[in-house]
Image 1 (tube, one colour):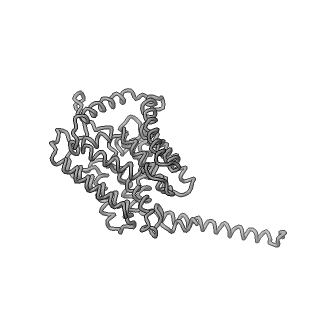
Image 2: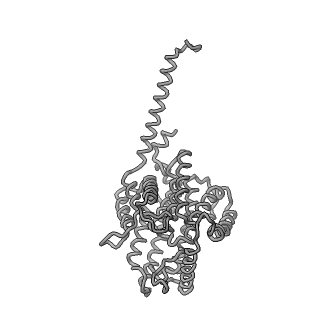
Length: 415
């Protein structure tokens, strides 16, 4: 007999009941967490990683899937009221009308892409931002689906099954090394919002950093560093200090992407850097020769006479200016800066989702310097949809709507 009058057998029974209850609680929690993944969104967004052209359609597979995702989303009712943020979509409509008018009256060059097809993709991308922002897409499932596809793509790449298009740097079905760097840095941040437990967040952070490193993208690595610095530091700063912090980032970026570019860890980049410099020189010449209103959609390329081939710009700011001039370029940069990063705003008790949204804005602005087209791409659209979702949940009209990232049931179980 024990001192407190409970037999050893009784203690064992109580311990078994306690352990049984814990297992039951863990099972319930796991069941609820699994229920927070909607299979359609998971699979639809996982498919976006595949960008090969679809025969007879004239569109890459992932861009075709954007139209399908938007149609699917419209079968669901919106969960959130946009409130004051609805004005952003008036702006989107205005700049899309503007770029259509510029493109329609422009004289296309010999190798320019069809502007009407490109404009339709931009319109579909805008709708994707909207359906994510208002909750017609289950965002956690979408993020997990695309992130899972990135992991599978990496596994197939290192197994020698997925394509290797850049000398051993991680590409796979993403096709392009710069694009691979862009999506890995953005989803390396987005995936942090899909989990609540610290060990889960640490695990996905380490995996994301490892995959990003294997892309060999110096700009993406710098973007991730600056995004996390912003997430850690900016919420404690006044607006003027945040502007100064952005200036410091700009100064440091040159060191990380240029002065450190020939470090041994990145291998010998002399040949690729020389080619990039030549493309940049031709691109800058085209920028200088572009008027105030731009040249129209599909014109952000240069023709290399020596190689007899075309190259897209590496700088998304230049691309925006050449296609739509100052109005288009300023609008896209301003949307990313003042909607996502919000450096001039005070800190009204932002939650972690809103702070990560700012980090995503910083990462996008950094990647736009060297990774080709960033603004108005598929990853940018998913980020902007997330950003708007993060801001609209704090509106009074959305107080009774399920919490961002998780439905109410998972919060109740955790409590």
